[in-house]
Length: 249
Image (cartoon, rainbow, N blue to C red; front, top):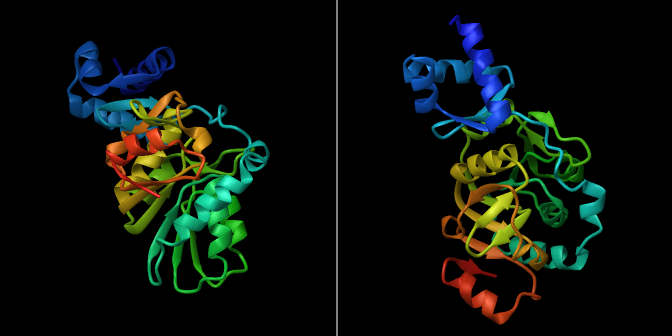
């Protein structure tokens, strides 16, 4: 099988199964794992797949995310409270990574009056919010997720793999005590995972309505993050359970 035919076969398999494993492909196609890695790397460069640990997933459009206008109108007071709590963790001279989302947007609004900070984000609405600030603002680059404002794809991945930050504020689509933090797509989860790897500490920022929910693709277990910042509507029992795994504010 020619390399072009092999890559076409791999893409077809991903379309059917959603994800492929390097070792499995190597066995099925009778080629070395290194050959499969090169194939997947080339497919990722063309934006056809997204490399994940041990294999790859399809680079599908991010269409299952709730549109920004819908999210912005929900639980506004709770998000503002979460943002105020998060602000207390930020100190002069730090480099802060802000995930895309309406809760992190509320935090960005509070940061407008600051001066000695570097803000990195994959959210064009957050970047636009800080246009008139005195902060140093860096955008990850990547493909734009329409109706949401988030950036994703190979350019985003490359950027995140080559930075280091003090604090990462992680947004969440769904949080479950057993399942952990999940998001609507593989692509969304991968970006969040790369952000976590770039940070000294990761704080989850989400209002309590996200608790008890599950989405399609896993981001991480709760034990993998530094702490959780939420509103005051969380029950005492739930707060106690979460505090067994991490700090909660």
